[in-house]
Length: 307
Image (tube, rainbow, N blue to C red; front, top):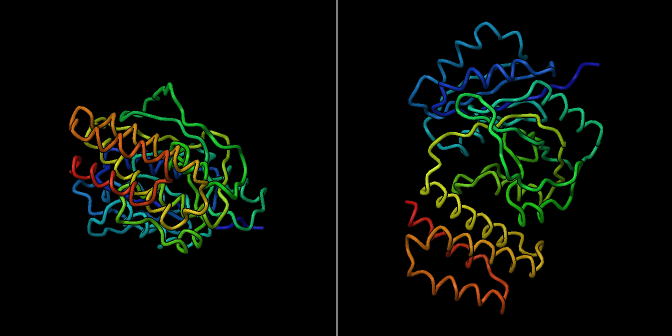
């Protein structure tokens, strides 16, 4: 019996320096039946040309290859386009600067088969970290990982914990991803938002092995960290607006207070006059459950600082 087609979707942007390593890791997969869909999101370097050159002598490795360029739409738009163009039931999403470990696809597809979970929509694994030169990075602190196997209530862990789904380890069931509307192009933190929406309707599962490497780039500036924190406030506000009944009130209060503290750590040296606003929100959170607009309000304040 032949194995089912599995897709690899690569949204690519300005990664000419890394694209060959990324594609080489896909070619080295032990799973045989693959298609490759790469959407170049209007790169200003020769990312797409480098990908074409690399794949020219490796076309027989894949059942199907799609290489396309589009006007710049951001990572959400490029990811949505790449996944929509795939033909496999399961799509392994891969950043154009990250790399897969050789057995990544085989191990995840085997786990999917073994679990036989009809409502499974996302599988993720553990990840290593590498620098811009491909050298390992040792991380002293790791996000708490959920238990292995499918979880039909993953929204609580996704909402209450730091993000533990590392993107190059992800496999998505294409029809479920499209059914929830894909990535929201209006959010800067499109991945967590999508995982939350998927978890509200489907099961999410973890394979407890390091199966990919996430590349860390220099230049993680304060402005970017402020922007990402603002995106978290907007993402959580959106989820509570759509699925607030899933999260107990006590958890929302605790979560909001934790993010207020993060807000103040970022802003106290930049806008110290916001202290009364932060303290007022903190005190109110003990008297009533924070609402989606409470999250959005602090998200907008961070937007103004990071812009």
